Length: 263
Image 1: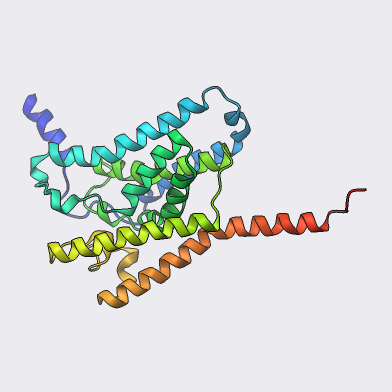
Image 2 (image 1 turned 180 degrees about the vertical axis):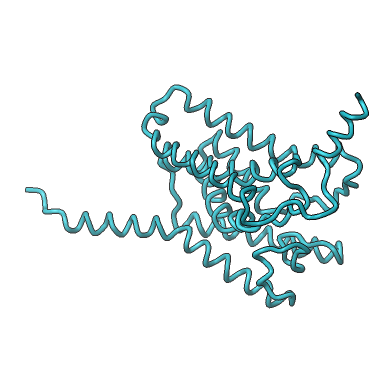
């Protein structure tokens, strides 16, 4: 009995020897659809949530879930020796991880700066992981890592949309500058770490393409070209992330100008 339980846990928390997760399948779309439905519900009931006595409890629950989700990634590595955890290979130099941490503290504090970082990092970086979640190729829906990954990459969006719809937070041009500046610092740290570790190190995917199919496969293997293309893509994503707010402000300005003067 104990041996059967141990084997089940080893399987659930382990990884497969062959690819178990495939892009653009039900296993890929189901978590995204669930997150989208929750976002729609937040929007639908935004006024009720804003005036609800449970607002604080909801925000704290989302924050707690986000932190536990992020930490469980490392708890699994430590608790499963078969994964051969090496701290050097799992340093906290990831856009997705930091975006979720920022979002969790945002839910608790309502900080505009944390909103700025979370918003642009989620919509300019984490979104690529949703399109091609290459890091879970060997862990399908029967594995813990599959659920940890999707919680990690969707909870941040739930928090962001909750703060936008319920607490009426929004980014500005200054927000984008702050978020881009911090992202540049993280990229420099990733580059230095990759160089120090040598072959195999690929923080922020700056060094080389991934082994499994990914949207990042379009990037050239040459580092200089790779960095330039990534910079251009990130700048474009930042611009697209801010575009809805720019259009909203422009529309509001036109409406205000077209309004008849007060007598």
